[in-house]
Length: 360
Image (tube, rainbow, N blue to C red; front, top):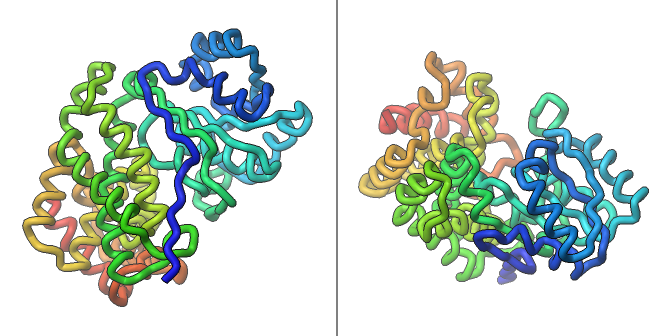
């Protein structure tokens, strides 16, 4: 049986880590393309100026246009070529990091990801989610390797709105349950192999860390301070979730998320907020032990994550809406087919209603 584990080459997490960005740039060259929005660049402007001066590097500004699209990638590839950059840096949220990874892949350059929020595991992954100009999902782009360096400054993340951290918890919440399902079904993971014991262990540790430290981490984030609990949750949201999902695989929870995009009411909610409800639907599909379902619901309520369609803005729940979500969740290549049993749109339709009722 072929087993594959993938991960970033180097993961660095520290309070004030961004000041050492120049040191990591110098591992690959002296000139870097910085893919970041104007707002994100301004948030850390003083630190960037300091690291440029200390390490004598050059950062070429590649202003990110807020959406990871093929046109955006093409525009930034041209900037990269014109300036003969040695490495690409993605700084910001998941879409900026995904764009940086896409640009680096086009030019076969190393990439450094610098998340300014802990809302997804995008900093560590070897793929990008590509959208159109309207923000609608287009496709996944898979790359030859994970980022060369993931540089996580906990001080920067602590100063971001807590909702981002909470959304990251929702995304990370699904990791263990989807990994468990993929292990049972011998489903292929993202690199095309089976789960290693280490990948499943990382997924389980991710869940255990969430249960232990989430409430304390939210308190720290609300006060914009760094504590051990916040550091642990940042690691869970970013590294443990990233390793767990890529090297174990995705299942129903993320497919339900994709299905929920069929409803306009959910568009203002973050990825992880929708995934948390998707996790509950997956547990209903599995007929998981009631104690486990209760544990997940109680966890979500303790940190303010959605547990019902109403929590995702869907106030008028109709069969038509639920059926649309169910059918999109069961599209031909969706990850719901990694479950260890056959899942139909009718199954998902029923599970959504039950999850919604339990979550209320």
